[in-house]
Length: 528
Image (cartoon, rainbow, N blue to C red):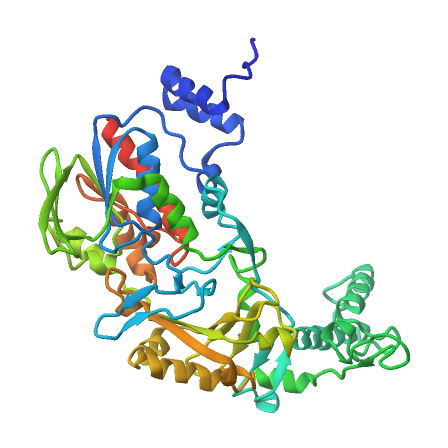
Protein backbone atom coordinates (compact mmCIF):
# COMPACT_ATOMS: atom_id res chain seq x y z
CA UNK A 1 0.00 0.00 0.00
CA UNK A 2 1.35 3.44 -0.91
CA UNK A 3 2.08 5.75 1.96
CA UNK A 4 0.50 9.17 2.14
CA UNK A 5 2.72 11.78 0.57
CA UNK A 6 3.84 14.63 2.83
CA UNK A 7 1.71 17.05 0.80
CA UNK A 8 -1.53 15.20 1.63
CA UNK A 9 -2.62 16.34 5.07
CA UNK A 10 -4.75 14.27 7.39
CA UNK A 11 -7.62 16.74 6.92
CA UNK A 12 -7.38 16.46 3.13
CA UNK A 13 -7.32 12.67 3.35
CA UNK A 14 -10.48 12.68 5.48
CA UNK A 15 -12.27 14.93 3.01
CA UNK A 16 -11.41 12.49 0.23
CA UNK A 17 -12.44 9.53 2.38
CA UNK A 18 -15.84 11.12 2.93
CA UNK A 19 -16.25 11.81 -0.79
CA UNK A 20 -15.38 8.23 -1.76
CA UNK A 21 -16.82 6.15 1.06
CA UNK A 22 -19.32 8.42 2.79
CA UNK A 23 -19.67 8.87 6.52
CA UNK A 24 -18.83 5.25 7.36
CA UNK A 25 -15.35 5.46 5.83
CA UNK A 26 -14.88 8.93 7.30
CA UNK A 27 -15.73 7.81 10.85
CA UNK A 28 -13.68 4.64 10.47
CA UNK A 29 -10.63 6.65 9.44
CA UNK A 30 -11.16 9.12 12.30
CA UNK A 31 -11.51 6.34 14.87
CA UNK A 32 -8.37 4.63 13.55
CA UNK A 33 -6.48 7.84 14.19
CA UNK A 34 -8.07 8.38 17.61
CA UNK A 35 -10.19 11.24 16.26
CA UNK A 36 -13.62 9.83 17.03
CA UNK A 37 -16.48 11.21 19.08
CA UNK A 38 -14.24 12.34 21.95
CA UNK A 39 -12.47 14.80 19.68
CA UNK A 40 -15.70 16.77 19.30
CA UNK A 41 -15.02 18.49 22.62
CA UNK A 42 -11.49 19.51 21.61
CA UNK A 43 -11.78 20.51 17.94
CA UNK A 44 -14.62 21.52 15.60
CA UNK A 45 -16.39 18.74 13.68
CA UNK A 46 -14.66 17.80 10.44
CA UNK A 47 -17.41 18.25 7.85
CA UNK A 48 -17.34 17.19 4.21
CA UNK A 49 -19.04 18.99 1.37
CA UNK A 50 -19.75 22.67 0.83
CA UNK A 51 -22.35 25.21 1.87
CA UNK A 52 -21.66 27.40 -1.14
CA UNK A 53 -24.80 29.02 -2.50
CA UNK A 54 -26.68 28.81 0.82
CA UNK A 55 -27.20 31.68 3.24
CA UNK A 56 -27.33 31.39 7.02
CA UNK A 57 -28.28 34.21 9.37
CA UNK A 58 -26.80 33.88 12.86
CA UNK A 59 -28.59 35.71 15.66
CA UNK A 60 -26.20 36.96 18.31
CA UNK A 61 -22.44 37.55 18.29
CA UNK A 62 -21.69 35.86 21.59
CA UNK A 63 -19.25 32.96 21.70
CA UNK A 64 -21.78 30.53 20.21
CA UNK A 65 -22.74 32.86 17.37
CA UNK A 66 -19.14 33.76 16.59
CA UNK A 67 -18.10 30.12 16.60
CA UNK A 68 -20.97 29.10 14.33
CA UNK A 69 -20.38 31.95 11.88
CA UNK A 70 -16.66 31.24 11.71
CA UNK A 71 -17.07 27.49 11.11
CA UNK A 72 -19.95 27.92 8.63
CA UNK A 73 -17.89 30.45 6.71
CA UNK A 74 -15.07 27.93 6.38
CA UNK A 75 -17.59 25.57 4.75
CA UNK A 76 -18.52 28.16 2.14
CA UNK A 77 -21.86 29.34 3.54
CA UNK A 78 -22.81 32.98 3.10
CA UNK A 79 -23.12 34.07 6.71
CA UNK A 80 -24.48 37.21 8.29
CA UNK A 81 -24.42 37.76 12.05
CA UNK A 82 -26.96 40.09 13.64
CA UNK A 83 -25.83 41.56 16.96
CA UNK A 84 -27.85 44.10 18.96
CA UNK A 85 -24.83 45.40 20.86
CA UNK A 86 -22.17 47.63 19.29
CA UNK A 87 -19.52 44.95 19.90
CA UNK A 88 -19.09 41.18 19.77
CA UNK A 89 -18.84 38.80 22.71
CA UNK A 90 -22.29 38.67 24.27
CA UNK A 91 -21.71 38.08 27.96
CA UNK A 92 -17.99 37.64 27.34
CA UNK A 93 -17.10 41.22 28.27
CA UNK A 94 -14.18 43.04 29.82
CA UNK A 95 -14.65 46.44 31.45
CA UNK A 96 -11.71 48.78 30.97
CA UNK A 97 -11.31 52.55 30.57
CA UNK A 98 -14.39 54.10 28.86
CA UNK A 99 -16.37 50.82 28.57
CA UNK A 100 -20.07 51.63 28.93
CA UNK A 101 -22.95 49.67 30.42
CA UNK A 102 -26.52 50.72 31.11
CA UNK A 103 -28.60 48.27 33.13
CA UNK A 104 -32.34 48.18 32.59
CA UNK A 105 -33.96 50.57 35.04
CA UNK A 106 -30.56 51.60 36.37
CA UNK A 107 -27.77 54.07 35.89
CA UNK A 108 -25.46 54.42 32.92
CA UNK A 109 -21.94 53.43 33.89
CA UNK A 110 -18.68 54.34 32.21
CA UNK A 111 -15.63 52.51 33.45
CA UNK A 112 -13.09 54.90 35.00
CA UNK A 113 -10.25 52.47 35.54
CA UNK A 114 -6.76 53.59 34.60
CA UNK A 115 -5.40 52.49 31.22
CA UNK A 116 -4.27 48.87 31.47
CA UNK A 117 -6.59 48.02 34.37
CA UNK A 118 -9.68 45.87 33.77
CA UNK A 119 -12.23 43.45 35.19
CA UNK A 120 -13.69 40.43 33.41
CA UNK A 121 -17.25 41.00 34.56
CA UNK A 122 -18.48 38.12 32.38
CA UNK A 123 -16.51 34.87 32.00
CA UNK A 124 -13.21 35.18 33.86
CA UNK A 125 -11.45 31.81 33.69
CA UNK A 126 -10.77 28.94 31.31
CA UNK A 127 -10.33 25.51 32.92
CA UNK A 128 -7.81 23.08 31.46
CA UNK A 129 -10.75 20.72 30.85
CA UNK A 130 -12.31 23.16 28.38
CA UNK A 131 -10.15 22.32 25.43
CA UNK A 132 -12.72 23.77 23.02
CA UNK A 133 -12.11 27.27 24.38
CA UNK A 134 -8.36 26.69 24.47
CA UNK A 135 -8.55 25.48 20.85
CA UNK A 136 -9.58 28.91 19.57
CA UNK A 137 -7.11 30.70 21.85
CA UNK A 138 -4.42 28.58 20.23
CA UNK A 139 -5.77 28.98 16.69
CA UNK A 140 -6.05 32.76 17.02
CA UNK A 141 -2.79 33.11 18.95
CA UNK A 142 -4.48 34.73 21.94
CA UNK A 143 -1.78 34.85 24.65
CA UNK A 144 -2.79 33.22 27.92
CA UNK A 145 -1.56 33.42 31.48
CA UNK A 146 -2.36 31.32 34.53
CA UNK A 147 -5.47 32.38 36.41
CA UNK A 148 -4.83 31.61 40.08
CA UNK A 149 -7.99 29.77 41.01
CA UNK A 150 -6.64 28.36 44.26
CA UNK A 151 -4.16 29.99 46.59
CA UNK A 152 -3.61 28.46 49.99
CA UNK A 153 -1.93 31.67 51.16
CA UNK A 154 -5.14 33.66 50.61
CA UNK A 155 -7.43 34.33 53.53
CA UNK A 156 -10.49 32.53 54.78
CA UNK A 157 -12.64 34.89 56.83
CA UNK A 158 -15.79 33.72 58.59
CA UNK A 159 -18.29 35.97 60.33
CA UNK A 160 -20.14 32.90 61.59
CA UNK A 161 -17.18 30.64 62.28
CA UNK A 162 -17.80 29.73 65.89
CA UNK A 163 -14.51 29.91 67.83
CA UNK A 164 -12.73 31.04 64.64
CA UNK A 165 -15.13 33.89 63.82
CA UNK A 166 -13.71 37.15 62.44
CA UNK A 167 -10.17 35.85 62.18
CA UNK A 168 -7.99 36.09 59.09
CA UNK A 169 -6.89 32.53 58.53
CA UNK A 170 -4.74 31.30 55.68
CA UNK A 171 -6.23 28.53 53.59
CA UNK A 172 -3.04 26.54 54.21
CA UNK A 173 -3.60 26.67 57.96
CA UNK A 174 -7.09 25.27 57.70
CA UNK A 175 -6.20 22.55 55.20
CA UNK A 176 -3.04 21.44 56.99
CA UNK A 177 -4.70 21.32 60.39
CA UNK A 178 -7.84 19.53 59.21
CA UNK A 179 -5.76 16.94 57.37
CA UNK A 180 -3.50 16.51 60.38
CA UNK A 181 -6.29 16.12 62.91
CA UNK A 182 -8.29 13.73 60.74
CA UNK A 183 -5.17 11.69 60.01
CA UNK A 184 -4.40 11.49 63.72
CA UNK A 185 -7.93 10.34 64.50
CA UNK A 186 -7.84 7.65 61.84
CA UNK A 187 -4.33 6.53 62.74
CA UNK A 188 -5.31 6.03 66.37
CA UNK A 189 -8.37 4.10 65.22
CA UNK A 190 -6.02 1.75 63.40
CA UNK A 191 -3.69 1.29 66.38
CA UNK A 192 -6.70 0.86 68.66
CA UNK A 193 -7.84 -2.05 66.44
CA UNK A 194 -11.07 -0.26 65.51
CA UNK A 195 -10.58 -1.24 61.87
CA UNK A 196 -9.52 -4.85 62.34
CA UNK A 197 -12.64 -6.21 60.68
CA UNK A 198 -12.22 -3.99 57.61
CA UNK A 199 -8.48 -4.03 56.92
CA UNK A 200 -5.88 -6.77 56.90
CA UNK A 201 -2.75 -6.37 59.00
CA UNK A 202 -0.70 -5.42 55.93
CA UNK A 203 -3.32 -2.88 54.86
CA UNK A 204 -3.31 -1.32 58.33
CA UNK A 205 0.47 -0.94 58.28
CA UNK A 206 0.33 0.66 54.83
CA UNK A 207 -2.48 2.96 55.93
CA UNK A 208 -0.54 4.05 59.01
CA UNK A 209 2.50 4.83 56.89
CA UNK A 210 0.34 6.94 54.59
CA UNK A 211 -1.37 8.78 57.46
CA UNK A 212 1.94 9.65 59.10
CA UNK A 213 3.07 11.29 55.90
CA UNK A 214 -0.28 12.81 54.93
CA UNK A 215 -0.98 14.28 58.35
CA UNK A 216 2.63 15.00 59.42
CA UNK A 217 2.00 12.87 62.52
CA UNK A 218 4.54 12.33 65.28
CA UNK A 219 6.18 8.96 64.75
CA UNK A 220 5.88 8.10 68.43
CA UNK A 221 2.39 9.01 69.64
CA UNK A 222 0.83 9.62 66.19
CA UNK A 223 -0.24 13.11 67.30
CA UNK A 224 -0.62 16.04 64.95
CA UNK A 225 1.41 18.94 66.31
CA UNK A 226 1.48 21.21 63.29
CA UNK A 227 3.56 21.30 60.11
CA UNK A 228 5.63 23.84 58.21
CA UNK A 229 3.14 23.91 55.34
CA UNK A 230 0.60 25.73 57.49
CA UNK A 231 3.01 28.63 57.82
CA UNK A 232 5.40 29.83 60.52
CA UNK A 233 4.75 32.30 63.30
CA UNK A 234 8.14 33.74 62.24
CA UNK A 235 9.59 32.62 58.93
CA UNK A 236 13.10 31.10 58.82
CA UNK A 237 15.89 33.38 57.62
CA UNK A 238 19.50 34.38 58.04
CA UNK A 239 21.66 34.45 61.17
CA UNK A 240 20.34 33.67 64.61
CA UNK A 241 17.35 35.99 64.28
CA UNK A 242 15.09 34.87 62.73
CA UNK A 243 17.34 31.85 62.20
CA UNK A 244 15.30 28.66 62.16
CA UNK A 245 12.11 30.66 62.58
CA UNK A 246 9.27 29.97 64.98
CA UNK A 247 6.70 27.24 64.18
CA UNK A 248 3.04 28.17 64.38
CA UNK A 249 0.53 26.42 66.62
CA UNK A 250 -2.23 24.41 64.89
CA UNK A 251 -5.87 25.32 65.22
CA UNK A 252 -7.80 23.06 67.54
CA UNK A 253 -9.73 20.24 65.89
CA UNK A 254 -12.90 21.15 67.78
CA UNK A 255 -12.63 24.79 66.64
CA UNK A 256 -12.22 23.77 63.00
CA UNK A 257 -15.24 21.50 63.16
CA UNK A 258 -17.34 24.15 64.90
CA UNK A 259 -16.37 26.71 62.23
CA UNK A 260 -17.70 24.43 59.45
CA UNK A 261 -14.69 25.32 57.33
CA UNK A 262 -15.47 22.69 54.70
CA UNK A 263 -18.10 24.95 53.16
CA UNK A 264 -15.60 27.59 52.07
CA UNK A 265 -12.78 25.72 50.36
CA UNK A 266 -14.27 22.68 48.66
CA UNK A 267 -15.21 24.27 45.28
CA UNK A 268 -11.81 23.80 43.65
CA UNK A 269 -12.05 20.06 44.19
CA UNK A 270 -15.03 19.85 41.84
CA UNK A 271 -15.01 19.58 38.04
CA UNK A 272 -13.99 21.82 36.34
CA UNK A 273 -12.57 24.01 39.10
CA UNK A 274 -9.18 22.43 39.64
CA UNK A 275 -5.90 23.81 38.38
CA UNK A 276 -4.76 24.71 35.84
CA UNK A 277 -6.94 27.71 35.00
CA UNK A 278 -6.11 30.27 32.31
CA UNK A 279 -7.09 33.77 31.28
CA UNK A 280 -6.22 35.79 28.17
CA UNK A 281 -3.58 38.42 28.84
CA UNK A 282 -5.30 41.79 29.09
CA UNK A 283 -8.90 40.59 29.27
CA UNK A 284 -11.26 37.78 28.32
CA UNK A 285 -12.73 39.80 25.46
CA UNK A 286 -9.56 39.03 23.49
CA UNK A 287 -11.26 35.82 22.34
CA UNK A 288 -14.43 37.38 20.83
CA UNK A 289 -12.32 40.20 19.39
CA UNK A 290 -10.17 37.60 17.63
CA UNK A 291 -13.30 36.01 16.14
CA UNK A 292 -14.71 39.40 15.14
CA UNK A 293 -11.54 40.46 13.35
CA UNK A 294 -11.75 37.34 11.20
CA UNK A 295 -15.46 37.70 10.48
CA UNK A 296 -15.17 41.38 9.64
CA UNK A 297 -18.17 42.82 7.80
CA UNK A 298 -20.18 39.65 8.21
CA UNK A 299 -21.16 40.95 11.67
CA UNK A 300 -23.84 43.63 11.63
CA UNK A 301 -23.88 45.56 14.91
CA UNK A 302 -26.77 47.56 16.45
CA UNK A 303 -29.08 44.97 14.84
CA UNK A 304 -31.88 44.14 17.29
CA UNK A 305 -33.98 41.16 16.23
CA UNK A 306 -37.68 41.93 16.56
CA UNK A 307 -39.46 39.24 14.56
CA UNK A 308 -38.71 35.73 13.21
CA UNK A 309 -40.81 34.09 10.51
CA UNK A 310 -40.29 30.88 8.57
CA UNK A 311 -41.51 29.86 5.14
CA UNK A 312 -41.13 26.62 3.23
CA UNK A 313 -37.73 27.61 1.85
CA UNK A 314 -36.50 30.59 3.85
CA UNK A 315 -36.32 32.39 7.17
CA UNK A 316 -37.15 36.09 7.51
CA UNK A 317 -35.77 38.25 10.30
CA UNK A 318 -37.08 41.75 10.99
CA UNK A 319 -34.41 44.00 12.47
CA UNK A 320 -34.30 47.40 14.14
CA UNK A 321 -31.09 49.44 14.06
CA UNK A 322 -30.57 50.51 17.69
CA UNK A 323 -28.48 53.50 16.61
CA UNK A 324 -30.77 54.99 13.94
CA UNK A 325 -34.11 53.30 14.62
CA UNK A 326 -34.31 52.16 10.98
CA UNK A 327 -36.18 48.93 10.25
CA UNK A 328 -34.98 46.32 7.77
CA UNK A 329 -35.48 42.70 6.81
CA UNK A 330 -32.99 39.86 6.38
CA UNK A 331 -33.77 36.59 4.61
CA UNK A 332 -31.74 33.39 4.62
CA UNK A 333 -32.04 29.69 3.92
CA UNK A 334 -31.42 28.84 7.56
CA UNK A 335 -31.18 30.59 10.91
CA UNK A 336 -28.91 29.66 13.81
CA UNK A 337 -30.21 31.51 16.85
CA UNK A 338 -27.80 31.95 19.78
CA UNK A 339 -29.87 34.55 21.62
CA UNK A 340 -30.27 33.64 25.33
CA UNK A 341 -33.61 31.97 25.98
CA UNK A 342 -34.39 34.70 28.52
CA UNK A 343 -34.36 37.17 25.59
CA UNK A 344 -35.66 34.90 22.83
CA UNK A 345 -38.92 34.31 24.68
CA UNK A 346 -39.75 38.00 24.25
CA UNK A 347 -39.12 38.12 20.49
CA UNK A 348 -42.10 37.81 18.13
CA UNK A 349 -41.78 34.37 16.51
CA UNK A 350 -43.98 31.88 14.68
CA UNK A 351 -42.62 28.93 16.63
CA UNK A 352 -45.10 26.25 17.64
CA UNK A 353 -46.72 26.46 21.06
CA UNK A 354 -44.66 23.48 22.22
CA UNK A 355 -41.40 25.09 21.15
CA UNK A 356 -42.33 28.38 22.82
CA UNK A 357 -43.20 26.51 26.00
CA UNK A 358 -39.79 24.80 25.95
CA UNK A 359 -38.07 28.19 25.62
CA UNK A 360 -40.00 29.50 28.63
CA UNK A 361 -39.18 26.43 30.72
CA UNK A 362 -35.62 27.57 31.45
CA UNK A 363 -34.97 30.27 34.07
CA UNK A 364 -31.77 32.29 34.14
CA UNK A 365 -29.49 32.93 37.12
CA UNK A 366 -29.34 36.39 38.71
CA UNK A 367 -25.61 37.13 38.90
CA UNK A 368 -23.60 40.16 40.01
CA UNK A 369 -19.95 41.24 40.06
CA UNK A 370 -18.03 44.34 41.01
CA UNK A 371 -14.50 45.41 40.15
CA UNK A 372 -12.66 47.74 42.53
CA UNK A 373 -9.55 49.52 41.30
CA UNK A 374 -7.05 49.85 44.12
CA UNK A 375 -4.25 52.42 44.10
CA UNK A 376 -1.87 50.05 45.86
CA UNK A 377 -1.55 46.27 45.76
CA UNK A 378 -1.76 45.94 49.53
CA UNK A 379 -2.67 42.24 49.28
CA UNK A 380 0.74 41.61 47.71
CA UNK A 381 2.78 44.15 49.67
CA UNK A 382 1.24 43.67 53.12
CA UNK A 383 -0.17 40.13 53.03
CA UNK A 384 2.01 38.44 50.37
CA UNK A 385 -1.02 37.07 48.50
CA UNK A 386 -0.56 36.70 44.76
CA UNK A 387 -3.87 35.94 43.08
CA UNK A 388 -6.54 33.51 44.19
CA UNK A 389 -9.77 33.92 46.12
CA UNK A 390 -10.50 35.23 49.58
CA UNK A 391 -13.22 32.91 50.83
CA UNK A 392 -15.80 34.28 53.20
CA UNK A 393 -19.33 33.88 54.49
CA UNK A 394 -19.91 37.64 54.50
CA UNK A 395 -23.50 38.09 53.31
CA UNK A 396 -23.80 39.05 49.67
CA UNK A 397 -20.07 38.79 48.93
CA UNK A 398 -19.46 35.07 48.34
CA UNK A 399 -16.00 35.56 46.80
CA UNK A 400 -13.36 38.27 46.71
CA UNK A 401 -10.78 37.53 44.03
CA UNK A 402 -7.36 39.07 43.59
CA UNK A 403 -5.88 39.73 40.13
CA UNK A 404 -3.81 36.99 38.49
CA UNK A 405 -1.62 39.34 36.48
CA UNK A 406 0.32 42.57 36.72
CA UNK A 407 2.35 41.17 39.61
CA UNK A 408 4.03 43.79 41.80
CA UNK A 409 2.79 46.71 39.77
CA UNK A 410 1.42 49.72 41.58
CA UNK A 411 -2.32 49.26 40.97
CA UNK A 412 -4.76 46.42 40.43
CA UNK A 413 -8.46 45.60 40.18
CA UNK A 414 -10.00 43.36 42.84
CA UNK A 415 -13.20 41.42 42.24
CA UNK A 416 -15.09 42.76 45.24
CA UNK A 417 -18.00 40.31 45.11
CA UNK A 418 -19.31 37.55 42.87
CA UNK A 419 -22.78 36.53 43.95
CA UNK A 420 -25.89 34.76 42.71
CA UNK A 421 -29.58 34.21 43.40
CA UNK A 422 -31.17 36.33 46.14
CA UNK A 423 -27.91 38.05 47.04
CA UNK A 424 -27.56 39.22 43.43
CA UNK A 425 -31.16 40.41 43.30
CA UNK A 426 -30.87 42.38 46.55
CA UNK A 427 -27.59 44.10 45.66
CA UNK A 428 -28.74 44.83 42.10
CA UNK A 429 -31.43 47.11 43.57
CA UNK A 430 -28.72 49.40 44.95
CA UNK A 431 -27.27 52.38 43.12
CA UNK A 432 -23.74 51.94 41.80
CA UNK A 433 -22.44 54.04 44.70
CA UNK A 434 -24.31 51.86 47.19
CA UNK A 435 -22.94 48.69 45.60
CA UNK A 436 -19.43 50.10 45.97
CA UNK A 437 -20.00 50.96 49.63
CA UNK A 438 -21.44 47.49 50.23
CA UNK A 439 -18.30 45.88 48.78
CA UNK A 440 -15.90 48.20 50.61
CA UNK A 441 -17.60 47.69 53.98
CA UNK A 442 -17.15 43.94 53.61
CA UNK A 443 -13.62 44.01 52.22
CA UNK A 444 -12.20 46.24 54.93
CA UNK A 445 -13.15 43.63 57.53
CA UNK A 446 -10.51 41.42 55.93
CA UNK A 447 -8.01 43.95 54.59
CA UNK A 448 -7.48 47.07 56.76
CA UNK A 449 -6.08 48.92 53.72
CA UNK A 450 -9.12 48.18 51.53
CA UNK A 451 -11.06 51.45 51.75
CA UNK A 452 -8.04 53.76 51.89
CA UNK A 453 -6.72 52.41 48.58
CA UNK A 454 -10.01 52.30 46.68
CA UNK A 455 -10.12 54.52 43.57
CA UNK A 456 -13.01 53.53 41.29
CA UNK A 457 -15.51 50.74 40.62
CA UNK A 458 -17.50 49.04 37.90
CA UNK A 459 -20.40 46.70 38.66
CA UNK A 460 -22.84 44.55 36.74
CA UNK A 461 -26.09 42.77 37.56
CA UNK A 462 -26.47 40.40 34.61
CA UNK A 463 -30.20 39.85 35.13
CA UNK A 464 -30.66 43.59 34.47
CA UNK A 465 -28.50 43.72 31.34
CA UNK A 466 -30.45 44.08 28.10
CA UNK A 467 -29.87 41.26 25.57
CA UNK A 468 -28.65 38.99 28.42
CA UNK A 469 -31.24 39.02 31.22
CA UNK A 470 -29.29 36.61 33.40
CA UNK A 471 -25.90 35.09 33.92
CA UNK A 472 -26.61 31.62 32.55
CA UNK A 473 -29.39 29.09 32.05
CA UNK A 474 -30.44 27.13 35.13
CA UNK A 475 -31.96 23.84 34.06
CA UNK A 476 -34.06 21.67 36.32
CA UNK A 477 -33.97 17.89 35.94
CA UNK A 478 -37.56 17.97 34.69
CA UNK A 479 -36.80 20.60 32.05
CA UNK A 480 -33.76 18.64 30.89
CA UNK A 481 -36.04 15.71 30.15
CA UNK A 482 -38.88 17.64 28.53
CA UNK A 483 -37.65 20.94 27.05
CA UNK A 484 -33.98 20.20 26.33
CA UNK A 485 -34.51 17.66 23.50
CA UNK A 486 -37.10 19.92 21.87
CA UNK A 487 -34.75 22.90 21.83
CA UNK A 488 -31.85 20.80 20.56
CA UNK A 489 -33.91 19.72 17.54
CA UNK A 490 -34.84 23.28 16.63
CA UNK A 491 -37.88 23.95 14.51
CA UNK A 492 -37.97 23.75 10.74
CA UNK A 493 -35.29 26.11 9.43
CA UNK A 494 -34.26 27.51 12.81
CA UNK A 495 -31.70 25.86 15.08
CA UNK A 496 -30.63 27.09 18.51
CA UNK A 497 -27.16 27.13 20.06
CA UNK A 498 -25.53 28.56 23.17
CA UNK A 499 -24.36 27.66 26.65
CA UNK A 500 -28.03 27.00 27.43
CA UNK A 501 -27.95 23.98 25.10
CA UNK A 502 -25.13 22.26 26.93
CA UNK A 503 -24.34 20.71 30.28
CA UNK A 504 -21.64 23.37 30.66
CA UNK A 505 -24.01 26.24 31.37
CA UNK A 506 -22.23 29.40 32.40
CA UNK A 507 -19.01 28.41 30.65
CA UNK A 508 -17.63 29.57 27.31
CA UNK A 509 -16.98 25.94 26.38
CA UNK A 510 -20.71 25.26 26.62
CA UNK A 511 -21.41 27.93 24.01
CA UNK A 512 -18.60 26.82 21.71
CA UNK A 513 -19.35 23.11 21.82
CA UNK A 514 -23.07 23.73 21.38
CA UNK A 515 -22.26 25.75 18.27
CA UNK A 516 -20.08 22.93 16.95
CA UNK A 517 -22.89 20.41 17.34
CA UNK A 518 -25.53 22.64 15.77
CA UNK A 519 -23.28 23.61 12.86
CA UNK A 520 -22.94 19.91 12.14
CA UNK A 521 -26.73 19.47 12.33
CA UNK A 522 -27.39 22.48 10.10
CA UNK A 523 -24.83 21.33 7.52
CA UNK A 524 -26.37 17.86 7.45
CA UNK A 525 -29.85 19.28 6.86
CA UNK A 526 -28.64 21.77 4.26
CA UNK A 527 -26.78 18.99 2.42
CA UNK A 528 -29.68 16.55 2.40
